[in-house]
Amino acid sequence: MFENLSDRLSHSLKKITGKAQLSEDNIKDTLREVRMALLEADVALPVVKQFIDQVREQAIGQQVNRSLNPGQQFLKIVRSELEQVMGQTNEELDLAATPPAVVLMAGLQGAGKTTSVAKLARFLKERHKKKVMVVSVDVYRPAAIKQLETLAAEVGAIFFASTAEQKPEKIAGDALAAARKAFADVLIVDTAGRLHIDNDMMAEIKSLHRQLNPVETLFVVDAMIGQDAVNTAQAFNQALPLTGVVLTKADGDARGGAALSVRQVTGKPIKFLGVGEKTDALEPFYPDRLASRILGMGDMLSLIEDVERKVDRQKAEKLAAKVKTGKKFDLEDLRDQLQQMQNLGGLGGLLDKMPGMGNIAQLAEQANMGSQFKRMEAIINSMTPQERRNPDILNGSRKRRITLGAGASIQDLNRVIKQHKQMAKMMKKMKGKGMANMMRGLGGMLPPGKMPPGGF
Image (cartoon, rainbow, N blue to C red; front, side):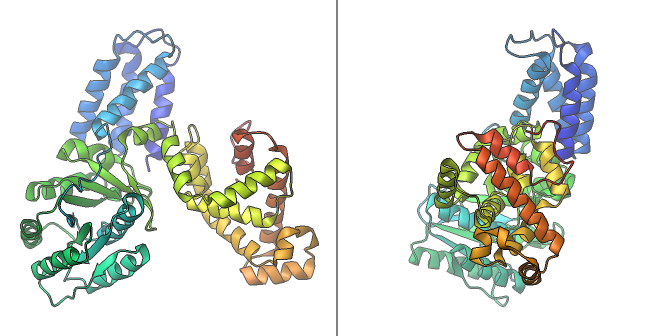
């Protein structure tokens, strides 16, 4: 998401580097390109117009700060205005209510509502230590009820059973009573969606809202539908007192305009981004961090939080101790590193959050590094512990057995051995050295010719 916008902005911002002062003349072309980039990213026209006017007003006549060149100064202004458009700060859920605090999820069919219910339940359980109950009042799609039951079991939430024969209001009332009885902190209600906005749908959800009096009414919308996301958000906002937005599929090949438009057009904050299919793929929305990523500055805070939550500390410490003492880096260590990287969203997800690595993240995605890592892991898993610790013993018959077990080719296995040797060499060099060497090693996993000149 935002790759095209990032590329266009970074290209246009280069043009004003080296100017002594920002003026109408020297920012005119840059502003035109910024405007085109935003429109192509599906940002709503009124939002683009206001954004450009604000940037122009802030930039013209500004003396360049001694510590910044004009390009950097202009970038700082653009970043500040991007944050302003998206809401400046993260707005958390307001769960300060007598338990159970009710969260009502609304949106069109196919937006990812049911998955978002499970993701939110997991988020509240793991990060806020809440006891969560979930219920589906979507009586029109029995599959949605079954899907929520499966997901609830996966994330460890209490599931309140419902059937297609029941009335939505009856289910909601019974679920609320059950949540009180179970001393649940939060009750998340998955409502019915339609393929389009209709009167019956709105009447039903208004009735549920009156009955449940939720502390949060979240509108779930698919970032991939671009400008339509803003239009549907407006329609729901007129019918319901929305408290926030969950923008799903934000990891897809979307233009990203919805994230820049929804807040400005509806006045409602984006509270979460759905960034993948797994139940842990829900991120609180931080406008400042997203503005940094759009402008190619990375998002180190989110990366640090990801590492703290998702990296197996024991395995990391074990590897660090090995590196420090110069012990041999074996294939089991390589497999652990591949798994850790997958937990952090793959190599593309990791690089995307590092300053100046956006283009390399795109190359990693284009090279389909995720599936390559999975194949490498399958090959290593097909080996015996002895083979993983000492790959030098791999002869022809052992290689045939391993590739048959992994459903891979001899070439794939040879590639894993070669990459392991590269990583082992890099780990030797890392003894007493820092992150630059580690990143150079990661770069060795990219296909030949995909590294930037001079490496990292």
